[in-house]
Picture (tube, rainbow, N blue to C red):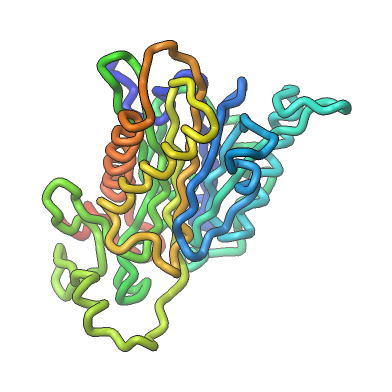
Length: 324
């Protein structure tokens, strides 16, 4: 059996999807039944999120029990309620006098531009994603939160390509694992960080060609409206034992993985954010500098996989179909 090269390579992490192929939306849940120390780094100007304030260092709650990535814009935040219900039924959560309160931060992408009906992720969608969760390698492409994702929208959605969901893992020589999961739905283009070539972007006049986003930005009027149907949202995780301030720094460093693969990133019309988790399942030694660099690399690879594995949907061609 080949080594797991996805987020579920992290001991203590499960992942599941709910996909509505008809409405072109979905949600993805990352479950940590024993809890994981967590934080988040929000860089985009248009975030849609839930329970991010409690992830700041210095707040009471240290551990979360799940993270939800969803489509549906802010409507998709409802999926987290279903995840809470699923966890509460299993008595997983922050202990209080009346039982437990599951801690479930969430973030959403705007995929309504491709929606073919009124379907949006709901509480039942989040519950269904939990029911499908396992430690199997994460399925990538046009699934879960990446179902209705699109990329390269500098010339409008009609010139974009399909985005998707991707995952990748990296390991240290000492045996610590760090991995990433990402839904790529960016306004900008996706580039190969190793050589700078455009992998997916605004489609040119001929199949397989692209109009560089920087060229479009050089020529546009300062008052030109840009569509706001974007966001790249991610989870990075490690099996190392880290404190809350350390895991917050891991999320910050991991953002460089987005900066190396998405051009431009963290714009006013993107809700880019990275959650970070530490399960503490390994006793092997690691430091935040080392893990941060590897988390960024895992996130780079996950972004590339997201667009490479995406399928042509909603009138938008996939990278594979456009370049073939």
